[in-house]
Amino acid sequence: MTDSVKIMPNSSMHKTQGPHVVVLAYDGLCTFEFGIAYEVFGLSRPEMGEGWYRFSVAGVEPGPLRASGGLTVGVDCGIELLEEADLIVVPGWRAIDAPVPEPLVAALRAAHARGARVMSLCSGVAVLAASGLLGGRRATTHWRYVASIAARYPEITLDADVLYMDEGSIMTAAGSAAGIDLCLHVVRRDFGADVANSVARRLVVPPHREGGQAQFIAAPVPEEREGIRLGPLIESMRERLSEDQPIRILADRAGMSVRTFQRRFEAATGDSVGEWLMKERLRRARDLLERELAVSLDDIAAASGFGTLATMRHHFRRRLGTSPSAYRRSFGGCMESAARS
Picture 1 (cartoon, rainbow, N blue to C red):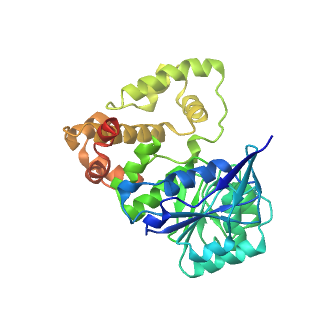
Picture 2: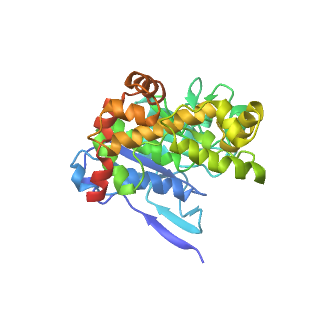
Picture 3: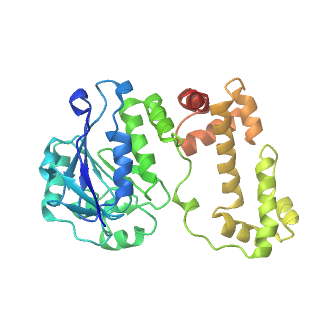
């Protein structure tokens, strides 16, 4: 039995006057990525006022459309709706190598040429690539699809180690859930950090995730004896972030030579020892900045293992593109507000 879903415009569309977001629907629709776009841009949010997004759906083909999960989708409008869009969202495409209809390619090019922003989620990058909008640009997609896209479109600079890529009027997200990160980034860009944080709280997700896809790419599973050795050691390293952790000492504690320890640690975690420690220290610092509003920046730098505020500030600028104080202003108190809401 197939369930039928009728996709209607946002019921609050007549009440809002903000950017018009148009999401594509097509035969073989990826419902998860579509749901992300609807959840962020399409839900009624009266607390945001009249300037919030307007939301519509454009069918690539005449309906009814088959969607993943056994759903049948009915859409009233076609791709002519892209002529009115301020932001076009392309959910994951039906297959990474599936052809893209020429009318859709032409509509996307025309919309972008008149100033609309275009963004893809996961394998939706295939549509943007086929349209030529990514030529000479940087982009990302799910790590499984990078090789396929790179082989067919060598003019695109692909980065598999980011959650999303913002090239101004063209944006791409990596795996499916990274679409949430990109959509929140767009909200942050359009309405500011406070509004993005509010949307994130309603989604029950962090307003910003650290790191890229490397942490999710399948890595060799360590042999059982390595798991026994490294598991407790890694937990101990996490508990001692405020201390110096020389590789030689860590290798001794693991019962390995330095070279063997470095190789097996990277196989188990996907990062070198130094990179892993840096990410954990940044994570600790960010957690403290969000939760411990009365603790000084100097104390947070020491508790996170950076030693000095200057060192912590350097790594925040380099890795996160912001300062610890700016991060605290943007995200401090998020957890308290979430608990109250």
